Length: 245
Image 1 (cartoon, rainbow, N blue to C red):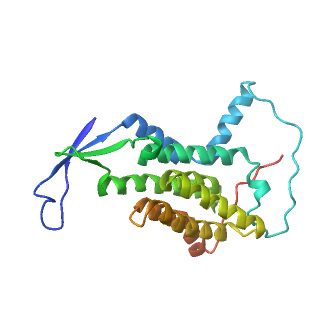
Image 2 (cartoon, rainbow, N blue to C red):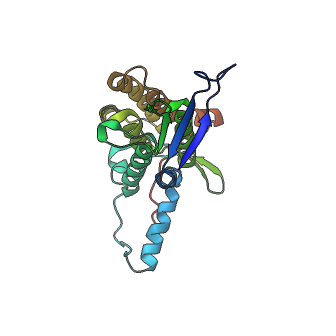
Image 3 (cartoon, rainbow, N blue to C red):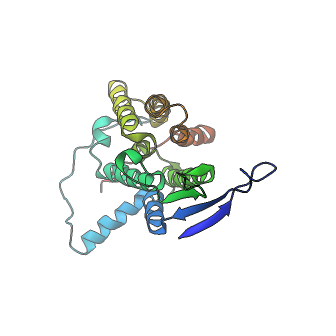
């Protein structure tokens, strides 16, 4: 389906009433929104349903859990990389982000496309803002959770998937590799982790994508949203931990 729209400047039409056509693949758009906006706790529903249908058995063998001291919420490599839901978070953020913004290097087109009368294709400022707005809503739904009280979480692997989608494979990979290497040597709380991650992603993203790539800036800003909210609320960011009964 196509929408015909006009872009206005401050006092006059841009380029003498230039008319552009926005082409939207609504099926892909809905799929991307579901992937990006779905809260992490919904993944538990699928597991419970599978057990109810007899498709999955409860594992009675308890895994070893590292005992933390009171108040210790540092990000631990061995713990985070053994959580299956972290990998699901990474994949759904990666796929959802790629569907929204596309990646020409990987041959993936965005579900949004702006074509002007000259046949030139681009995303356009309006579509860029729409894409980032959709992703920002997803970020808020991931780190903000209401469970009797408002709790702030650090969706580390969800952010990693977004980094790959928005900044490209090179920037996403090296930023992910460096932050976990540094954190393995000196574990820090989620606030420090995300702050350093955002800084690394911004610098490496500019190196790979150039200084004019606004997706890199948008990704870096979104990575510090949970940090800023946590600091303003004077409450620490929590990690997704398994509930052992």
